[in-house]
Image 1 (cartoon, chains in turn brown, blue, yellow):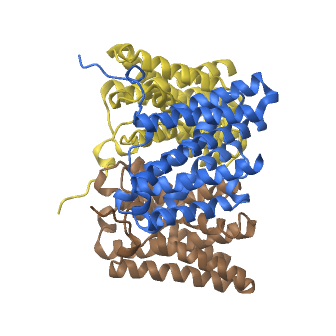
Image 2: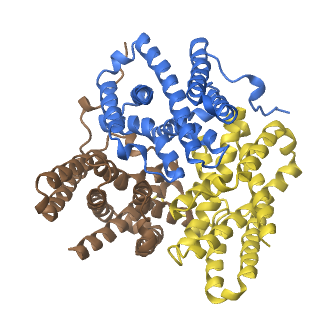
Image 3: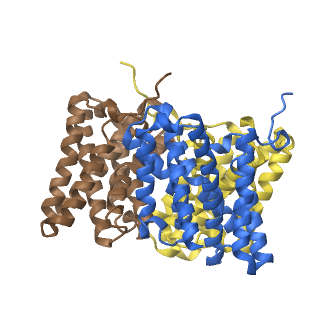
Length: 211
Length: 211
Length: 211
């Protein structure tokens, strides 16, 4: 169980780094920039979470997160034309969606265990962990952040984290199953959004009427 | 006294969230983005302050800050045409100015009590608390930050915080009155700037002479 | 030795603040913005490092860092036409390069002493300390960050920090000489890059082939 979660975390780290580097390819960055931005995408969100929780940052005690994200970033940089092949890029998007789901629920679980700001902080820090790294990357790279797009990326995380907190509260004895269910829920919405190119519906978008 | 300060803090939280969401309206953000950016504006500055002070982040022990900013952001999102009415938007600008004044002096007061980096840190962290959240919002939303505008927004905070530190040093027995005076001083300058559309004078602006 | 390092640190603080303000001159910022951005450039990177290390931020116990960066920013703001003179600006670029080298190795040394995330964290936090403040400045000022340029700025820091960690590991008894050597190594590459306008070579830059 622990082991599975660990390997899924590493898979998510790979996917975050690779999708970050590929997203930046059109900007002509150099190897150093690619590795820094790949690493920030993979570990930035969890770092902010740990700073707010005032616990040691997760990668300082398990450097594998660093090595894996450096390795994946270099691989994506070197072989970006391979990763840009339609099928592999598409696979990476789904793995990224799984990574997001996993990082969010792992974070919510950690915050719940620490009894930090319940019941709201697990949701907030789940979202921060899942999208914080990507936000920093976009800001540093001068790209529009996902908060300003209508991509269905962050909303599923919100639903999944709220679902998980409800399940932990109502069914504390089924923690493992609740985690799996919440991860699946986030991934299912995200995968549907990728597959059918769904976006946030109009009525949830603010529109300034021209008068 | 404590109660008054608490309610003023909540009023500031409402104003920060509402003005944030309204400022973003032309960008066509969705509900999720509006709530995240409203919340970051309201609690982001205080979060950075608490991280630097190495004390528990303020909202983790009093979740009302979260609920109020989520509620205010949703309200502003849903009723943005109401809030955009000239008189209500103008009211919000003044409440925002009051919020800035209050957040800054509350922060300076907290830092002074902790004896952290006196006498400079209360001023620095007062400014960080008051404008930090707005800076993060503008960066994430791809807007020009207020540091690059000539709006008379941050300078009054600087004056007010320095004034408060001087008063705490010179008249330690009149702490409450000093706080009220400093808050009033910031608000008065800011309100004048809103009312008469004042900006930073030319001689305080760097101008590269074309030679 | 301690004293030399301290004065070099202060020289670096001056150079970081001055080059920051000069870089922003074309943006017509006001005095307040100039001081805030000068200060962030000088102390931002070290602040992030200390937050991640969970130690007191360095400037809270030695306010000279603040005073020096405020003073240098005001001087650069007031006398920017002087500092923009070709010879003085060029001198500042070299002092900035020395500051970067010094900040990076000082940080790597501090992290090594704390035994934090060895052997990777000294390299990561050395880079964060040296370029973090400049990244925040560029983001707040709406400029392209150095990660997206091909300037040979960050790569020498990476080499120098890796070199220093190797030397600390292999020759622990020659710590002082190792530090001097690594600082010199970073500075030499950076100074060459300034002098000969070197940039990152093509084969280390990702290029999306148009197909």
